[in-house]
Picture (tube, rainbow, N blue to C red):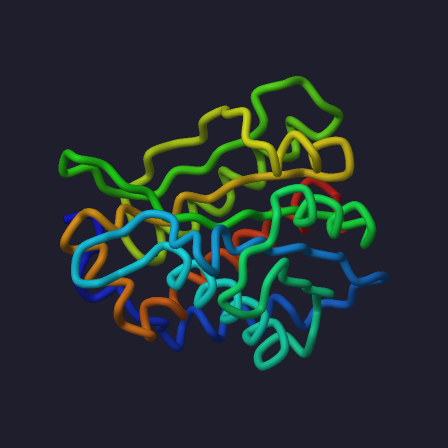
Length: 218
């Protein structure tokens, strides 16, 4: 099981850590585009326990947006490519990021496999681009926080040729997160609990913050 007991809900310690960290001043708000994959007639992966990819990633994206307002007093300027169960074209998702001059583009997905595969992996564009190193650093930061805070198995940072990344990689660091395998019984069950959705959203937000405030990026 890749999601360890006792670490699958938001701890007050983590909340306190984030509140203290986000209290630091920041000259300008970073623009983040969060892209919950699939939607509408495109359900994405179909998991066990009646879990659908399109629903899980929308819940996580909306929770990231909500926590930014509730806990961080809108420290970031966050936009979602979809706010409801609708299907948006891949080109339109990328166009939104470019139009907003996004500082980060993060696409959210869930994995599937016929075997008992489990854990989180993050993809960066396979083609060379001005932001490839930054994309890798962002991916590592989010993977580390998710594994360290929630016990999620790290499957590593990989390269791929996804359309949304091809069309955003020249604008900003661009990553695609496979948050977990909904074909794995334990992970599908994990995502059915809204407390765990909040926990995953919060660790992604923390990973973003630590990336942006590392190596002089603030």
